[in-house]
Image (tube, rainbow, N blue to C red; front, side, top):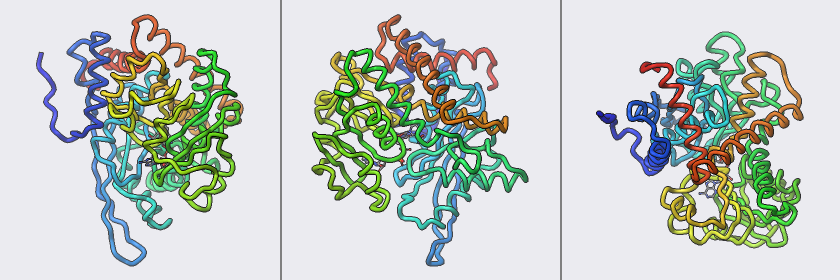
Length: 424
Ligand code: NAD
């Protein structure tokens, strides 16, 4: 059987990590060779340069990407990241995980991801708007409500999605809210979308603690990353009665064994923009936060923070992967041997975001809007179904929970590809 002839385009640690996960899952379900490589590798990608006029009159050219990993099972779906360390390999890995996630939770979508190499904190509001609009302008023929539907990710937010939607709509000549999700409510955003990812993470944590017979009001939680996902997870877990003992952002963390007042932390970050110098506890480094003794550890920032260096030192009962790809392959091997830690893998754990993005897209296409309660009820129903399926697969084949989730997601994509034929 001939193997894929693939260039070094995506070559990076994070893409290799996603490929390794794929290979393990494909081996575990004996995925036929004939379907493997075209299920594994991204279908197509786009790289663009984005000139932006700066405040001082100069022009800076940024580089951006969109990778559509799988478009065989529906329009591709996935966020756009604005971060200085973005690479096309990272975007490809994130696109791959979107494919498995959408398939695992039963959404009629393929997987995609986008990114721009930029530190958005270094741009003025108007520079950020120009960059966002220019990115969408370059993508106009590559995305669309029935082709590829972006959403927010690290460094992007509702406002940016609103600008992108407006640019796309101006180009096609009519309002097209379904081209992106995670928009402001005034532009067709969904009730509950802003908190969806964190609310879903917290809901699954609560469910797993129930399975473990650990009362949530006795649980302590450490969260790395206090952006959209981390902060919404903290709010929801606090509402469930858990005690948040550590939070962090790129400037470092705060630890307070008595519990951090999350409302105060949110109010602080509103004006200070960063957690640095927040007086709600003692400073702690991001590395030490991961090794804190706690009931639940939630990485909610970037990839590859749980490695072979710290996996054996984690002191949590539940590792809830709110971020995409926080655990390296080597760390996974260590965690698989540790029966004291329940892992909720990223493709399941943070799927609340894309589930409510799907609801937003449905509402936009039908012009019929739902209440927040309807959104959350449907979200929890879909998470329950996905959790049950993953745990059944885990029991049936004696897989780790990550392998269970990935084999379900990958198996369904491969089945659809095989049924459609060679072309898609
Ligand atoms: P965000 O930009 O809103 O927040 C990111 C947070 O991580 C910020 O607090 C930032 O300061 C912090 N951070 C950045 N670098 C860090 C570092 N080196 N150490 C510690 N903290 C650091 O992004 P987000 O939307 O909350 O996304 C966080 C994670 O969740 C990402 O892995 C993303 O792919 C994943 N995710 C997001 C969504 C969504 O709906 N936004 C959905 C699913 C998964």
